[in-house]
Length: 209
Image (cartoon, rainbow, N blue to C red):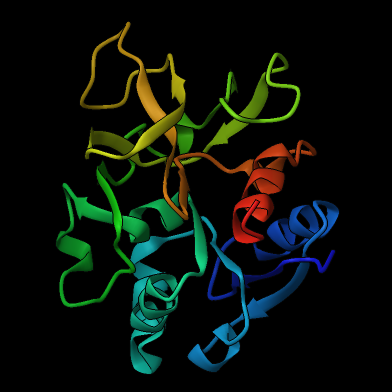
């Protein structure tokens, strides 16, 4: 069986860590800096980092629009942290992103830094639906993480957090990993641990499994 071809958007963020996790999950991996490098990919990871910086760096070569077009043609996309913001159909506090294209397509509304500042970073063990060894929690690292405030129809929640976002109240469970068709989004950084099961799920999605 041919290994899925997966790209990692390499404008900013934990690119090398995603490359490592995808390769360990059985994918053929390459980094992506410009639209031509999307050709032939089965999937693309949009990593964490700073969503406004990524959108600005992508603008001159219209990279966000090219990713959207390739997704419309069948390519799977996985957005983590800032990547989730760029995938979201709606951003509650999008002022800093005004004038710049995003990928869009994932029918959620998110709030940037919805779990607080860098000082509010935390790790949480999550039950994630659909992963192998589902009974074993996934250790998730949250750093200036976006909060998913609203879900559209057809968006499946794979995991929810017990930690309240800045707009929430204690005791509420907020979605932190979601799937819609060939789109996967996570508020956290799955690449910062040795657990590659979420990357394995994405490789299976990209390969059409």
